[in-house]
Amino acid sequence: MAVVLPVCLWAQVKTIKPSQTFALPAQSLMDNKAKFDYLVENNFVFEDLYSGKCSWYCGGVIDTVEASSCLPPTAKFDYAPVNAHDFDHTSAWVEGAKGQGVGEYLVYRFPGMCPRVTTVKILNGYVKNQKAWCENSRVKSLMMYYNDVPYAILQLNDTRNLQCFDVGVLGPHDEQAPQWSLKFEILEVYPGTKYEDTAISELYFDGIDVH
Image 1 (cartoon, rainbow, N blue to C red):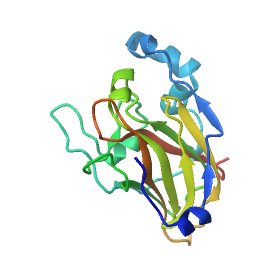
Image 2: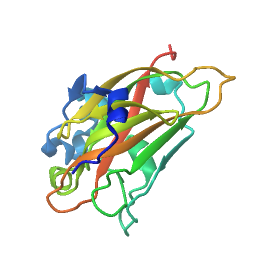
Image 3: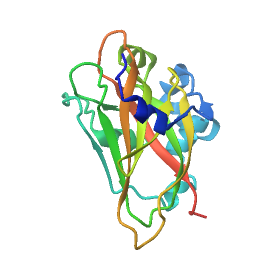
């Protein structure tokens, strides 16, 4: 399913494909809590999410994470926008609009002094297990806006791998600068086998100006 945008809008923005991808651990390891520490030390995705190692987030700050909609919570799960930035692969933001969520979006707001962003990292779909990933829809392409101006189209693969996008250098990194934002709008999706709901488990950042 695709959204039709004016030709001039497509022409003004570049399309970015993943520069790197990193596989999640085997499901048998992920389901074994006793092996968690091993995964943190031996798998890039788990190291990135759970190790607490020095990273862009040593100085990088997100003021808020907002969304156009989210699926209502259940007794066991919630699908809030902050789930896309909680460094937990088992949770997810799931849009709550009718259909497959084309046009729904996440917005990240940063303080002016925040270190600049150069990389967007995405775990696409509900990646907590293979069943949830297959049954729910995943993002095929995202329109990325920098301060509400279309900046790039991120073209995602239909995979549970972590996908890393090199997006240039974004942000003023200036204490006197106002708050700035990155918005990610769903343009196209890969349909789920059971649910129309489209999920993003993690969308987080890397960059410069920290060390």
